[in-house]
Length: 147
Image 1 (tube, one colour):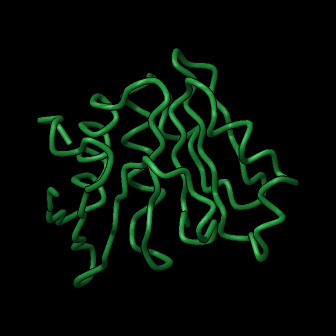
Image 2: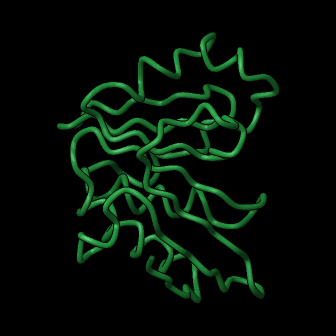
């Protein structure tokens, strides 16, 4: 497990960028945290590691799934509006998390027990103002120096 303290949105993006550089094809990243804890900000940094412009990364709450044409594909999934497990099938969740792309799931807790077993878990917690605690654990996170 690794823990970071971010003092600003720019620091959160930089942590995301470093994490993005460490990701491998097929990785699934689940983000957990309250509204406003910095999940989308972290994803903007992760996406930058794949050459995606920050302005192109928005909360996918309404589209639910945004797939970017990178190599490997960068897939941003937002489960905020999911109310039932059956909706995962309806939005094509399994098609996106079963390939060689990098799947990053906001509000991963909404998938309940349906998350694939081997994921990288990132927990974000707002401490005070813009200060965030970011904890990374799970799928071989200990073996990757940059995670």
